[in-house]
Length: 142
Image (cartoon, rainbow, N blue to C red; front, side, top):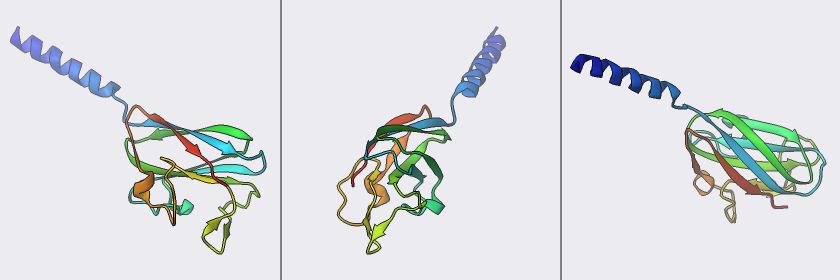
């Protein structure tokens, strides 16, 4: 009887472990989109990625812009620490246009919506994504 209970317990434990999600989705509500010109670009970064360097991001989503709000969805994202940067690429250049190489000319926003007085840091925008997924909001600033 004791052996039967042990086998049953092991079976239950393995079944629960098999059903535990190892990755979830991240929904990003982007608010404050000025118009429907160009596209919205959202880059998801891990701590080891070069934050704000889109070519080195963990994942990048590009969708047509729509005025007001947009909902973006990153699928199959492992749990962990992330930061997100989104911007409205109004002229569809594929990059965030800057004045003097440092002042954004297009609307942009960061996870946690931090007040930025210089180049944003990963730590200011970092959030933890659980295995079950999450939803965050980003407000674009022009």
